[in-house]
Image (cartoon, rainbow over all chains, first blue to last red; front, side, top):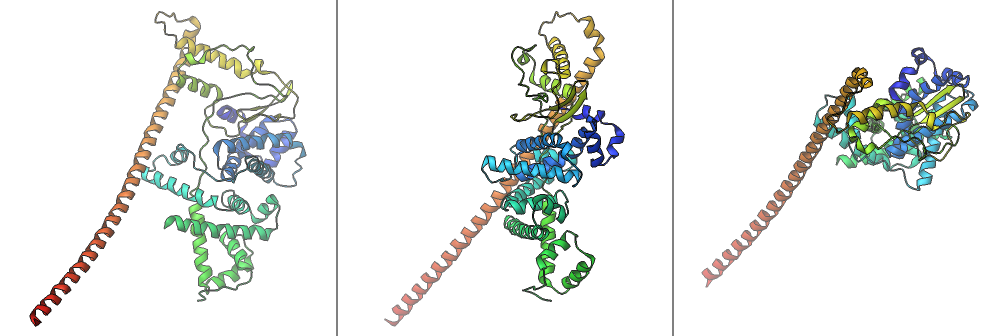
Length: 201
Length: 261
């Protein structure tokens, strides 16, 4: 673990640099700049991988491998896209590889122990137990509903809902026309609406 | 209000664009006007907003703190081998102390990717905390091997200190170096205590959550059982009433027949 030590090493003013500036500095030989990029993007990448794959440990592996590949290919990054989009593309490709390798549908499964609870506790230490139970139940419902979606619809919804990418960014990332992204979102949301209604009843 | 079919051109795409507020100004105005007259679109928009609100509850689990730290240099370095200076028998030290030691050495916060780049006189190093291995990890030239990795010296020193501390012999003399380290030992103990108390708090919360879930399940089951009993009672009452009516009709018939005779 590098955690806090690493965070301290990253200089304070580097926090204000844009991703692209940090990439340029990394290519120029400044290791802290790349470490700053890792700090900045590891959570979103992990969250993306977890929601696509549904397994915490594999999501962490994907997250790590994403940064390793990014580092290896950093010289090839020419700034034609945003750094985050480039990173998302690497992560999504790794997720696809994972699904292919594992030969299974990426059904999101609730972790066996109390991670969702832990997360809630971290964010809202005063939340009541009832709230936490309700939230965990809701998480399970959402995970079950998301598992019903075809891959392309699930990916579109994850990128839009949880990473707030624009339609165009999603289209560029997954390599499809912009109107297809909207269609996938509409169809995916319609499926989710139906599945969530079933859970309520 | 239009109730059943909506033939607005490009309706699904526009609905999604409107929902995510990613729509051209002119299209927005036109679609807003449409919404005021189309019940179907208005209802669907509200329903999809509800779906989005529900989706926001889904958070990925907080990654666990992992302690199986292993440096990976840029060359194809094998894992630590048995001829390296392995100081130790970690099983002699309590598990919690091992965890605490690892946390202290490796940093407490949960770095998810666990990737760190360093650069020194010998070139770039890319270090990772965990991975299933397999692929080479970096582009840069190889740097110092495992035996000279800086973390190993730290870990060995801390391990030695912990082993000294947990020696079972009561007659153990306090070495001068240990006395000099009194402050850091106190700090170490403070941190270990903090970790233990945090762990206890987490277990308490976990227990409370489990209990609450069991109570909720029991209540749900009880409600379901009550509904079932209620239905059964209703059925029995209906059947009994039916039987009673039949009996009454039969008695009346018999009375009529007997009176005629």
